[in-house]
Length: 64
Image (cartoon, rainbow, N blue to C red; front, side, top):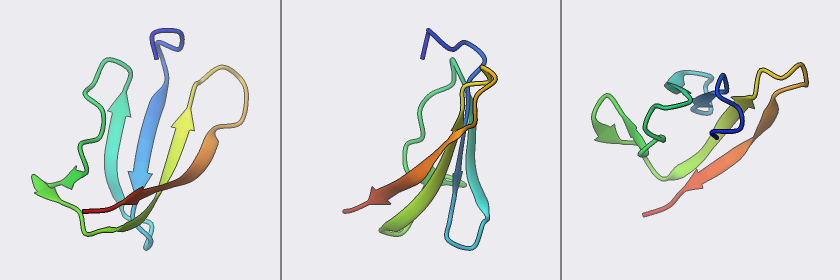
């Protein structure tokens, strides 16, 4: 993500609760919320490169 130094990443659960917010330079999401691994399931991500284009949206699946 060095190419987009102002990018931000959000991770949400299925109820829309934000679980993670990271800016470039932060560690990547480790699958934890409040120090505990999230349950297996599908989570929404929004990656905003802050380059004038729409943010990327998709899902990430956590499996154990």
